[in-house]
Image (cartoon, rainbow, N blue to C red; front, side):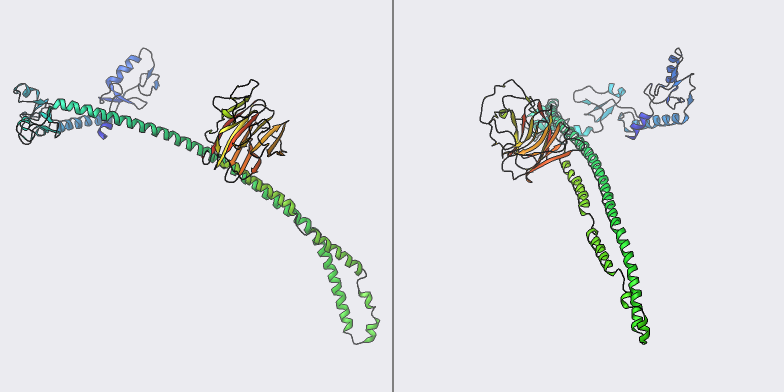
Length: 533
């Protein structure tokens, strides 16, 4: 292998032979001197010279620099290659003075012959010639020492004539070696074709799996980017909400602290005044001279002249402390509730984009609904489709899907072609098919309506109007069968939750559409576990 690689590196790109007197151009590429001179001679007329390998142009005819190192390597390689050929080649058995390559081998003589000795070799039939070989003894019978000429089909062995006539293979069915060889080659070709077919099948499967793996990797990469962006946005919102809550707490703390500090200061002054008066009275009480005690002002004068009013003031401050001492929990709770809504919004991300698996059932479509060939679009039309009236066909402009769901989490997206009255949702297969049985107008269906530019969600004739403005024409319906939840989302940026119905589902749920004008198209859907009814 290394010799083959070296051989490729020592080839002139012009003559494709080992370099002879290699020279190098300024761009670094090497050629035989004779080869590059011929090329440059042909470029003399145009006056533009360029390298045959990299096409780098030279203003003047480039000077040729002799590559001595490459010349030595090429010479050494040629010598080594010649020595190896002489060592590994099959030489004539009779040329003992100097080795001469053999051109044929004689199986009878067990000798290899050059051209000279081959001309003088016996031409008798027992002298069988073959391509030069070093293992001539393997072409003779190990028992009779005769040439193997036949093939025993019963024992699957190559035998000589003596084995067939008098040996252990006597009476067996035999074939000539060439005939047996062709038969085996035919079988081998059939085996080869079968193996090739299997290999091609495996290769095709590998390619399909590689394609699926690339799709999975691309999908995972896209989802990772989407989740990263979503989490980044959530962290930003959480940080903003945290700052808002902490700021509100700090503001309320300041509002409460300032009046309390003033009240504390007033009470401290009053406490000091009372302490001073108490010390003076205690001093009078400890005097032994009655005259001195009696000459002091009346003890009533030592009391605070505004004591009664002070009690009222203190009571007012206490009332203020009691009424305003707590934080405004309502404001903080509202802010934290907003945070919960942000986190809840992540729920829309549990569904992964996937291939559409919801097809409309023409057998249930009303006769004024045109269903597309791919069973994805329902269009209102004035032309009656003249479908046969059956028990499963809706009398109004409704249609439901072929597939129903009895477990797992699933979603499907729709696109509305024009504004007007339309309904999307899910229903039980037991829903009534008469005119008055619209999706949501019974206890067997749940729906999102648009009528008179007003959006509502309806179940069992109970309507809940959606107050938020809706501008998108794309919507998502998500089903979590085990959890008993059917949710509707507006496919805006970011996706917006509209409403979630909660129920204990008792039948398979089918996608359902009502089209008053325009059309509704199913864009796609996915499931966390596919289990159609």
